[in-house]
Structure formats: C-alpha cells, structure tokens
Image (cartoon, rainbow, N blue to C red; front, top):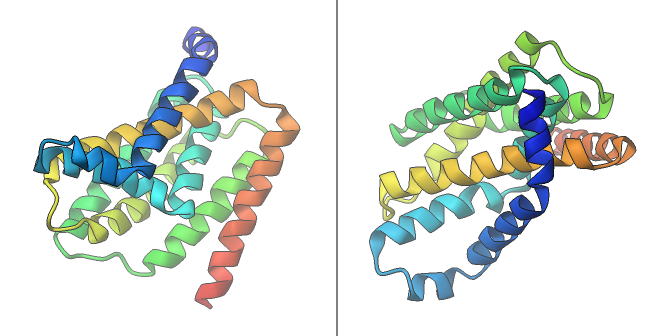
Length: 203
C-alpha cells in the first residue's frame, strides 16, 4: 500500500490535469452536447456533472479520499470502495423511488463527521472509517438516485457518476499526500462548518 501511495504522489500533476479537464467539460455542457453524437454521451456527461453540482457531495467525496490516505494500509482501497458500494445501493433505492428517512440530515451530518475526521489529522481505525463511509455513502447515493433525470441513459449515467466519484476520492488522497498538514486540517474544519450550517438550515 505504501508503494501505491508513492506512485499516486508522483502522478499527482497528471491526475489534477485530468480532473481539471473533466471540470471544464462539465462547465461547458452545451459545447460538449454539440459534439456528443447522441443520448448515451449526454447520460455520461450528466453522470460526471451530478456529484460536482453540489458542494455537499463534492466535499464528502474529497474527504473520503483524505481519510483513506490517512488511515493507510488496506483502507486506501477499501474505504473508498465501501463508500462507492453503499452509494450504488442507495442510488438504486432512489431510482426505485425509495427515499431514506432524514436524507438531508444524513448528508449534512456526513460533512460534520468527515470534516472532523480530516481535521483531527490522525489515522482512524479501519473499521470506524469503513463503517462511516458505508453509512454516509448510502445517504449520498440515495440523494443522487432520487435526482437522476428520466431522460438520461442509465448505464452511461452510472459510468460517468462512478468515474467522477473515483476521481474525487483519488484527488482527496493526493491532497492528503502533497498538502501541508495544517492546510488539510483547516479544510477539514471548514467541511465540518459547512455541515453544521446545513444542519442549522434543516432545524
């Protein structure tokens, strides 16, 4: 796992470049659609765009990557995998029209919890990190599933959705590896504050 983290660190500039390219494509949907060739690409681009459209989802996915890198060992792979698997399960419930109770509260609390874990700047027990990733991944996935437009191709949407989620997790790992610890702690604190603000709005 240490070797894998070293490789990720060396590949950081390329990874950030690819993420920037993806973001540009998302921010220019009309241009992308003009060259899309049809329905399937539209579904793929919609899947890429959806996790980036909300600050809550974006912060949560980046935080999962940071937590995974901090925890180390098998967590580098398994913590993001737990989040993604739970997110898929939650999305399937949403597509079926089943919304989780206290959905918005669960998403807001995920930012409070993930942000606090990042701000602590210390490795988390694997079971604890994986359990929270699974729990909150279910909430985030359910929100996405409930919002999937009926006009997009489901499979293409899912591929884009999973691709950008994985990219955000990887970016979080790179942030943990290459950023100053104080900056990462500040980002975690800020993420928790966003979560607290969202909770306050729901009360």
